[in-house]
Length: 338
Image (tube, rainbow, N blue to C red):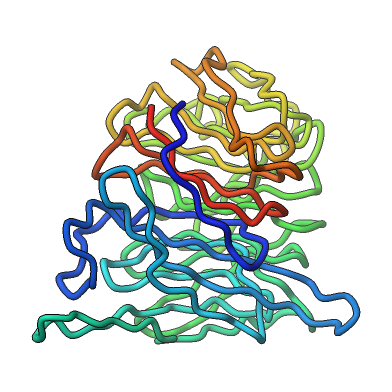
């Protein structure tokens, strides 16, 4: 991988997401090829406060420009997803999911834009519940908490419903790319659960040898389910086989394959053009590229990342040779090219 550019941030950064949408006309950057956002989270032990920020970046050719960094002094950001070209959702440490909206004015020669909170969705859980992960579809958000609760949010009606729960923290949750009625959740209780959101019912679960920290599906592989585990392994399951099982009978499910990543696979991201190329944020082992669901083809990290807790990774949809990563303790966002 070729390191193109990087940016030092003021707070610990844990999520990066390229926009899959067209760039808004009011963005104040000429010849902007791409945009992405990052989120950060910090715990100030002495003040007993959590805080963070959201930042927007522009990519011009092979350079990164920090356009805006909005401090969030009352909460930290633990996950983020784009909803539209002008809206993105974030998982927050104060028992909320928030929608932020980008607005601007392109009527003048010098375009200006702002980022403001549009909606706030409070989960009705335990005091101090932290939202750790989220995913989006057209009308719904799913989010998971450190108390083991999984919630479904309808952004139209603004309803917040409890789907189900785990015995420990839920580190990851996502909608199925093939069927948005199915939700996956992975927890420190070592289970990957599959839920039907029409009935708030668990269909089946898959036991892992340690905590499940990531889950992903891909439309090109509708029969496959990919999970990351704290035992440093990426596992691939045959979803067609799992669908014939029940929650009580699926505890000893065998994976089609198990690949030692050499680090906890915290993010699993398929390249938008070459689905046989997978990018992985592997925590203390940096970033990995996986070819054809078999072999690690490359391991890399920014040489300025000394503490290296790799939590974020994403591919550009506009230039699939580009990807972005972030290191939590080093507070660095990096732009790469294959």
